[in-house]
Image 1 (cartoon, one colour):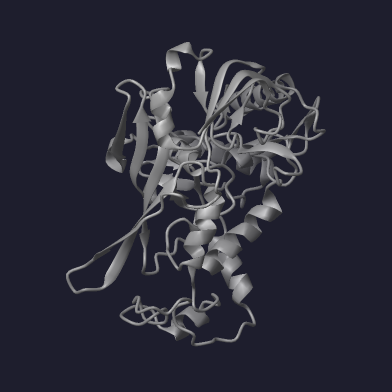
Image 2 (spheres, helix red, strand yellow):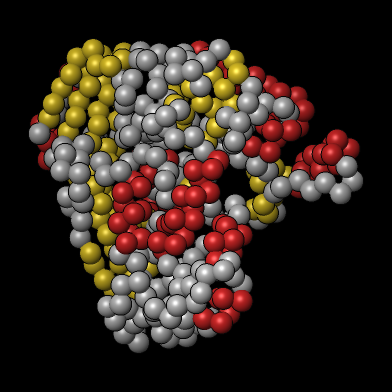
Length: 392
């Protein structure tokens, strides 16, 4: 089914809440319907949009906005395919999810099923199709880590194709879909490779500490897997080899550790730091975290110690022979936390986020505050921040 709306108001279709419109809005609910679309006759350019959560409309869009819908609000094309290792232990599940499914609904479903992989990505706004374009990430996990295949419609050949993850050119918040293939493919579904045995990622962004805080004072039930169905895993989880229950409890982590527990913990962290797009317009993390040379980082450390004291430690992450420095830390150090410019504001609880504080911010307000942050960071640290948010 295809629906069309001319002079369409996009205010409720972008999480920033920008009051903009497009010349034509097209909603497609069945992938096969793409074959009947004459893209050349649509108002140009044609922009494929997901949930509108990682973009900034810089004004009214002169062309066509196309959205792959999910009218039944369920996993229309879901299929569970299980592979086994030589010793017969079930290990992986391949799950195909339509592009129009809300990504967090997929995360919730996986956690309920006891499937590991997307739990650290919980509460990231947007849809499944866009997650494969942006290579969304949080708390040590990126979409590419769990994607197996991207299913798409090739506008050039007018055929449906299956693109393996290795061919997608994934990098930090980028992919071939955003660069060399931009505009060519319309993602219709994504197959994710999820684990049936525990694969927790805890050592990023305070996840382990939050789990330990959650586990304090909680008795140790021996309940096995949350959904006992002959699935096996490390000892203390559902049988097999691995850490014992005593080892988990000695660290203060809730036991048994499940995808659902990690999901709830991640949601708790995010809700304390990030605005709810339903209440305050934003596009999530606005800037990418820069990766710099070690000698450049050493100069930043010297500057930070001069300003904050000799014992001050600059937050950072080793990335091979380089260093990733949190953009939020630099923005905070430059005094931007809570700063307003027109209707735009650097969010007080997380300076990596720019919000539509008044509900009436214009694209120009957002862009002006963005540029002021970029200019200040460049002047102080010699680093040019790049927006994670796509400008349309």
